[in-house]
Length: 475
Image (cartoon, rainbow, N blue to C red; front, side):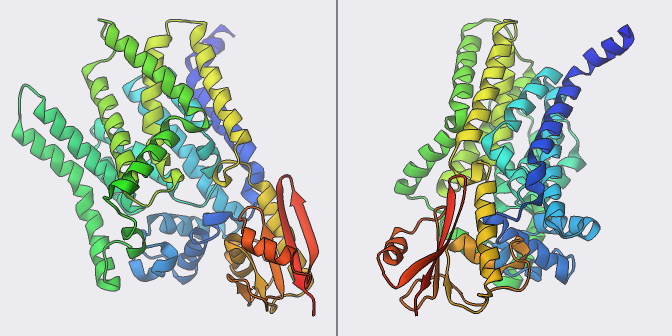
């Protein structure tokens, strides 16, 4: 029994990781059966099914650019390949996403164990796994978690000097989303700074490192050249128009992104303890980290800063910062562990308190991308079902963006039969049916139908705080 107990003690942090993964899987289990939601309903699930139906391919023209959004096809290719093996059902699609999420947690743990300690790995996984955006995105058929996985895999391979793994991982990242190029930029800047401040400037070594970092760009460039030949552009024009160096845009996006990363959803507590830890390290004369650990912390921090700056001049959606969260949380976990771990009673309270805070914000947030979206999906299902039961397939129906997808795209998972043919994006006096959703409020349309005696509400459904109403034009 003592030997078993000793073995259990030696495996306590890997077992802790297993409990985190199991808890995530159990909590998200019922989500695996839900229809796709918001952006995963369109364009991502649509693009995956198109690639599945038309044959697995990496050619840019395999999916229309308005559906792939001009992104390289790695995510779609992997998801479609998964579906070739496990089927195209909603459960299969969400399981693919959950596999990516659990793999990311494992990579975070392995990274920390290799370069810091198993305890840091467990703490980093715990703090990351309880992030609202990760919990929500963990079963979404979308590429943000995959980008975070590639990011951590590349950092692991680079500092572990696994050159082939780094080239494969970085190439895959560039072929998933163009923003993966920021890791290449960050590592280039990191190596240049290391070279500039090194007492021995070894040009040959710098050249070799820069070749390794840039090599994935050369492989990925083949794809973008083909895209240029097929479409006439290297990067999707829709996103290019959002690239801006104007101060007005930058001055809004940078504080917004920084606040999201460092303050929102309970991360202000983590940031506070990181600041305290940095102050304690700066004040102390002790050596807290080895030279290699300092380099890794510097590289991760530089990546977070550069990615935040990039997001400030690019098309900005908060969830895009997900791939910067693991490096930030790892750095935070390392600093907090080094400074507070000596306080045996205080340290657990800090970690438990941060974890509880993150879960609280997940449970109480109102942002559709960071909460239990079951009520929204259930309300949409009931509205679509009502329209199917009343055979409104050819009727003119006004619906908001998400509902339009639910009615017209069978991949989204809301339809039981054929698609609706006359779903309108613009409301007019001739619109026969008008559907109002409080997930996408349109006060102008809502006031029009509420104050127009020709319209009568024929259906209302409410799930928790999410409601939908259908109004019919009286003949």
